[in-house]
Length: 110
Image 1 (cartoon, one colour):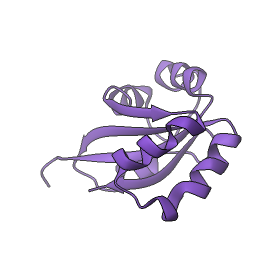
Image 2 (cartoon, helix red, strand yellow):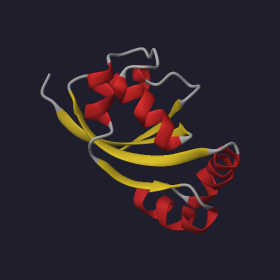
Image 3 (cartoon, one colour):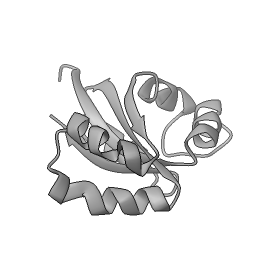
Image 4 (cartoon, helix red, strand yellow):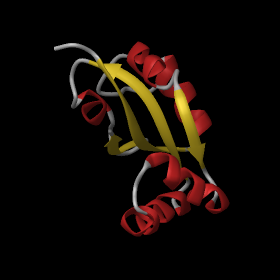
């Protein structure tokens, strides 16, 4: 299957420290550290404050009524919302690479 570029929405707990741990290999994850370096190399936008949530929702192409409360809840738990562009031949790759503790897969944006 050809690699297709897709945008993914994820929530990352304690964004800066998590990226250091995951890309550096100090945290055991479902995939190798190099995979996470590639995944987070092309971040489109991030949102960690309620003030930026409206703009983030527009970039994600979701309806505000469908995601605002859930995403606000994640932000109160110290998660940063992230949209990344990633090319992968496996459409479930990003979903399977998240551990649901530090990195939560939310959805693909097509």
